[in-house]
Length: 497
Image 1 (cartoon, helix red, strand yellow):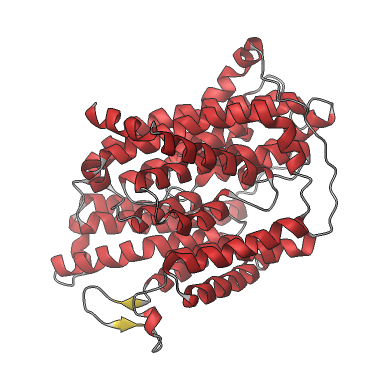
Image 2: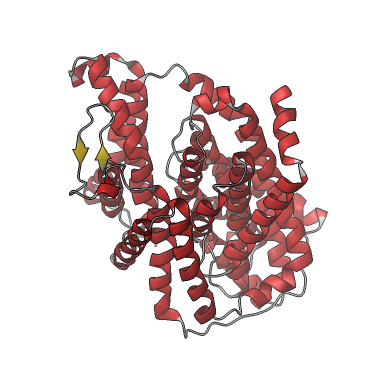
């Protein structure tokens, strides 16, 4: 209880409240602008938070993460252009309801469902994180190696349409993480005589390049595109009777979203689509989906915000990112000198409770902002891209240089942006690459330590029951697409009559 009081006490400081409120405002704005995203905003924000108090910095990013997930629904509903990938499912019914003359009602349903889903996940996060960390304290290097292998195998289902491309991107991320001096042997690897590479590739310039610069180049093709826009005069909250009718959908999607979020690498997009599908499957009126059904809005919105809270559980308790955005928050924790994982819970529990408080504040914050500023956010969608993206370019340059005051980092950012642009054009998502980059060091370190413990005999790893468990999960995760193709070949689905 003392740690809870201390954590919430840090959040209630006036400066920290302002920073969290600023994170909520930026998150909603970023989510509302098509093309921008929470990972991009956090990547750009990260170098500017170095001088801030670590608790305030991480709490602001967590608040931005929650608010950005909701913000994507604004453009999904108003212009049928999801501001964030999880809002794709929301657009299916939200835009149809807006076209019927009820954009305020659609936004209100999205806001309330997001808040309820987010709060549900936050309380699960508060209860599950210490328990999971207590279990993880019993893990040794072998068990952690098995866990990170399983997390990397989950990249296949992380984002994009191709599992193979996701695994390739994740593998390249692991490869890039090996640049620099090997800590166990002192051997310099892949530095090609460049002194700046002896300490490895820094996270921040790469993240800014992949999430901001590559998207800037990608969006340059659509500068003059026109879309149908509509404004919402006010956000209209659902009535008590509407919420009562939707309680099953919201509760079911919140539980599903939290579970999906806790799984390494799944994230909010998968949760939103599953929330929409389950809402339709359990609905008494499934034929109304796609025509402006309230359940079609509540289901995905509750699920994607719940997944945002759930993704923080493995990030803080195990040091395994639950999504692409939490991978950036994990990098920020490392940047500020924290050790993500069970030791974070035992050594600095007040930080965990401060993050919990910030996410709780953020969920109520974006509801309040939506109530007051729905009309303003509908006008935000009118900002021309020819003004928006040059600003992103300037912040990318400043942010990559400000991290360590090195021009080399600017070149790394620009090169990462160009590579990321061509990767996007060929169906590769940046999120699996970032996860590989983050997890790569952990894989290498735990494997090296395990080989030392077991005298360079890999087969001895199977003496650990936990390693065997994660090894089986990894095999199942990687082989599922293969077995699916075999099943479809020999047992094809019968055509519906």
